[in-house]
Length: 117
Image: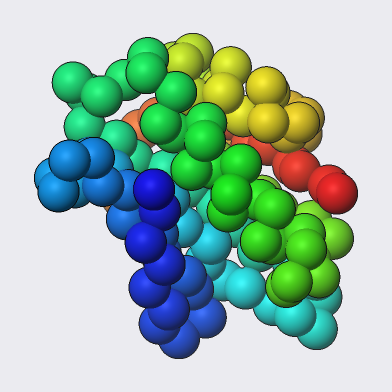
């Protein structure tokens, strides 16, 4: 179950299983004025494929579009991360574009997804 933590312009939810942290989901760069935020998730590899990321992200998305009243969430993942891309698509996100990373010295292609209520 996600445990929410708030800080600045972001909210992080840690996901626990049997008293052990197995991953996290977040909303960051929350802009109530624009109705937008970014989201992401990270789970331990030994927890992949068990539905925890989908369940936790569904809760984060419901919070964003419900109580926070947001109208757009952006998510980014490596183009090659097909599992993350499939999860985003199952959650209703749509691929908007791919772009090159702007991280210095770390060339990679990023898939940018958009989610709406």
